[in-house]
Image (tube, rainbow, N blue to C red):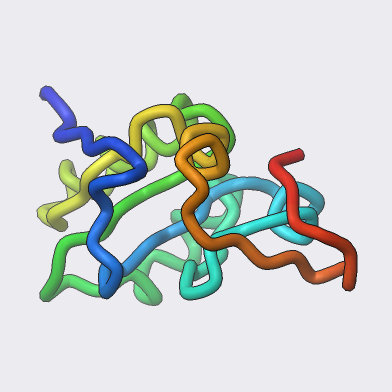
Length: 107
């Protein structure tokens, strides 16, 4: 199954953005409106992922998010992988926040 992919600069501003990185990565820097469900928790928390709208899945570089997007699509959801992950997000200067009080960065 081919997973649809989008570049970070093309993710709609009102998108449901699912960040599947680990907690330490999330704390360092993430998109302001993203929802954080680590890849290791996605199976148990899939009910938190909307069934009625497209889900954009992001990780650090695009590998984990590709796996999660494929799994969500297999379940019948509409999931799109964010190519290049948060590294690309940061590179194209999309908004980021941190949970540390320090400037955000991709860990």
